[in-house]
Length: 68
Image (cartoon, rainbow, N blue to C red; front, top):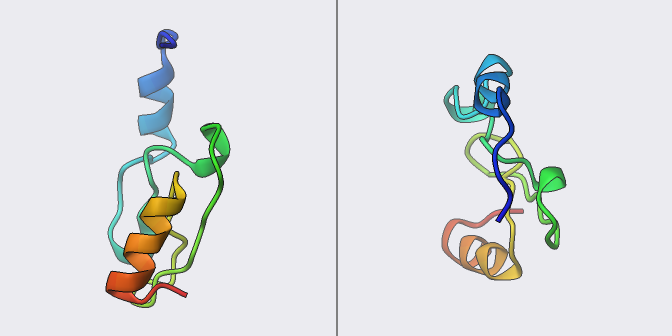
């Protein structure tokens, strides 16, 4: 497991990560920062991309909430 470098959390907070509501919400982790298969479908309610880290997440969300 990787160790957090000093200042990592403070930088994310300064960038506004994990903050906002609806379309202005900024996720704490972005898919480009984590080695995984990338899925970024847009939500029908907010219009913002949802950062999904696995195919299973996309399958569940697309079946339950109608992501595009």
